[in-house]
Amino acid sequence: AQKITQTQPGMFVQEKEAVTLDCTYDTSDPSYGLFWYKQPSSGEMIFLIYQGSYDQQNATEGRYSLNFQKARKSANLVISASQLGDSAMYFCAMREGRRGNTPLVFGKGTRLSVIA
Amino acid sequence: DVKVTQSSRYLVKRTGEKVFLECVQDMDHENMFWYRQDPGLGLRLIYFSYDVKMKEKGDIPEGYSVSREKKERFSLILESASTNQTSMYLCASSFYPGGGDEQFFGPGTRLTVL
Image (cartoon, rainbow over all chains, first blue to last red):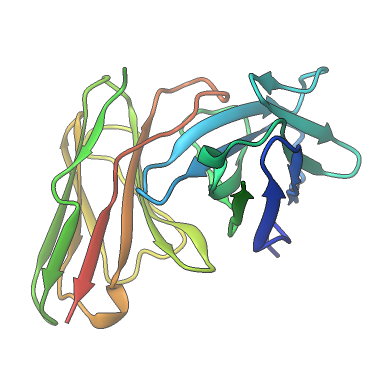
């Protein structure tokens, strides 16, 4: 079974609008972390935001916020006030357990296109 | 700033050649990882290492080997390149032990095997 599911292969959003990218995960470990990365066309992976399984508050970083619904096992990324530079692939990832040397497991990604 | 560098951005090799992909990080990170990225499949883990001379298989290790002789350097080796190894290869590193520590990625190597 897939551990990370991103059901939206592609999405379009109007500039200055908010957009939500979906991510659901599957784990039986009570301790885990969830990550979102952005990959522009240049190819580099850029870390955006992190949510720990025990964090009470939803994580926020500037225009990025993570809508963490633990019971539903979802960790959706919300981008507010979209900009043209937000056009990229977005990957959701999970690390199970508390140890930092556990690799991340990635979803298949969502391609976001921001339209002027 | 953490810097992860990869030896080549683009590489073209022939079937059967031995291929070395080098990755170097400059932040004294314990953990290093090799992924391959293919359209529609996301990133898949090939191998990772949490210490010098230590290595662990990821999800798709077949056809690959790795070497970590120094902490800052993690090499991916294709013993006999095949066309189905044409892909984007991404190296990453992270600091242990924090579970919240993100992985820092290199710019990627786009390998074409003819």
